[in-house]
Length: 113
Length: 114
Image 1 (cartoon, helix red, strand yellow):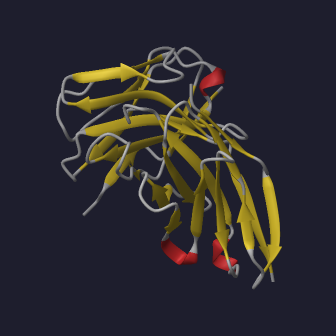
Image 2 (cartoon, each protein chain N blue to C red):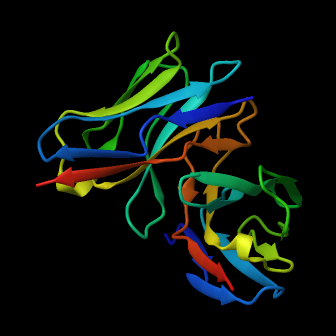
């Protein structure tokens, strides 16, 4: 069975400093992995996705993530945080058939001025 | 394009009442799904549909029914509301199954059961 663990429930950074949001997954096959962002009182928006092509995936708003099979990780990074990045971020894995998606518990990112 | 539209945005129900959360998409997507979002638990899949007339259960289907009579609409019915169903509900759609394509989410319905 697939599972997703987001290692931090809250991350706080200062504006202009790097962002690291950690995600580990468990899967018996090579999964598809996604990062979504949810701004307060909004729906979810896709940041980026990994679907067995390049292991370093670039997304919107300067975010990127690296798929590391040996570490079963898919951490999200950004070189320099902006105030507008403050939101909740979800790591997601899809099942083999692609019909079911499993969300991590979420990491809330705070950005201090 | 409107994308994925959910109604209502907010709802308060009494225990035992029934209601239907509406979801419509105008992107001609085959795949639609319903999630509930609870603090510290991410989003959990309730039901999903891979096309008109085809539905299946997700992770937490108990207490909910769905139907898919058209490609555009995927309503979620609460048969007899319980306080445990207090949550934020999201509808999502995608062009095909989730394996390779992004999902588009509605704005959510905040439901409180008292």
